[in-house]
Amino acid sequence: MSAGAIPGRLLLRPGHEAARRADLLRHLPDGVSPPAIPANALLMPPPVNAHDHGYGIRTLDFGNIDDALEVWIPGLRLRPRTDPYLEALVAFSRLAKTGIGATMHCHNSLNIDRLVEEAGAVMRAARDVGIRLALSCPLLDHDPWAYDGGPQRLRPFLTPADWDELSASIPHYAPPSVQISAADAVAAANTSPLIDIQYGPIGPQWCSNTLLESIAEASAATGRRIHMHLLESPRQRQWLDRRFPQGVVRYLDEIGFLSSRLAVAHGVQLRPDELELLAARGVQLVSNPSANLRLRSGVAPISAVPESGPAFAFGLDGTGFDDDQDLWRELRLAHLLHGGRDVTRTFTPARVFDAAIQVGAKVVNAQGNDDLVLVDYSALIVDSLTDDLDEAEVLLARMTAAHAKGLYVGGQEIMRDGKLTRIDHEGARAELLKQARADLPRLTGERQRVTKLAAATRAYYSGW
Image 1: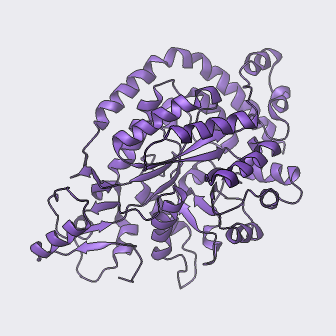
Image 2: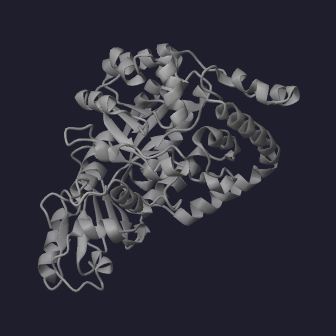
Image 3: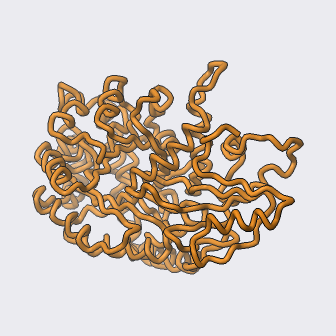
């Protein structure tokens, strides 16, 4: 295969068992006994899930069906109240079972008073599973009900009684300094070298200028990374163009927000000049193909990104193509989606794996790690009639989570023979579902309110 298409990969060929065992031992962490090595095993750095939300219970499971992003957001109110540790434990163990050793977790809580406690539970879950974690602490001070004016914009589309009932749940946000201090407190409480704490402004449409400028200053002062949603849907593009006549990306550059410490997720609506500016500032872009298709936001301009950047990675965003959190399938979708129609492919397997492994590691601040995933490559080529297949092409055509058999993170064995070594995933999942079902009586009434809020949201944006 072409050199560098899969960075750091080692194909363990059959017929040379002693050599294969020696090769594997050289790549395994110290003290880890080698598993049974299938013929044609492939040992490689695991791809990184560079943007996610840690959904132990996926959105469809509590009745929030796919829709346009802004109409879908009210349905998040239907998420059952469960133990944040258990929610994260199930989400992270689900990823580890697919051979993913690192994830970006954009925490969902909007209550700054609970952030330190909840983040502590999330970090404990990551430590127990054994994966690397970048934890993006949520920061916002504009309510996500409606752009261009907030909740009051939806009032004409609700009855007075419904407005009175729904408006009682409009949250109040702490000042920027209090929110940033809470994120700093989470970072101060972290003692794990496998965990990185980052500032997480939800998106410029949900942040005041004061908050965005404060985050830029804090990142510059602390060196802490920032992870933010940016220009995901057409409605966000429309609103942000009105709010920032110079363009939101140009505004972010003016306040010192753009730097190599920043990763932006989605970027579906980015224009060529904005891509150039992000590249010039060293910003990383995280693409989420399935989520953007499922929530009708469109296709990010990844295929238009030149070799000069911006560097891009991939993430599942909690809504993978088959709703199974399989990043390998997500890479396949990206590879096909951006393949183009020319006789020569420019969006090559090498770019896909560089994005998923090396750029992904930068997004979660875990560069230079020696993590490994063991792939049952023989199962992928069981009917092959040739020995000279390009492994990267094979992975992008056939690889699924089921072919990941071993996972090693930070010198520890996380999965062996397709089974997690540290966590009872099914037991945790059963307990999480038990907690969620106990909350169903409350959610019965909430569902009626969500239906009204989603209908008002649809009516509001239909007039744009």
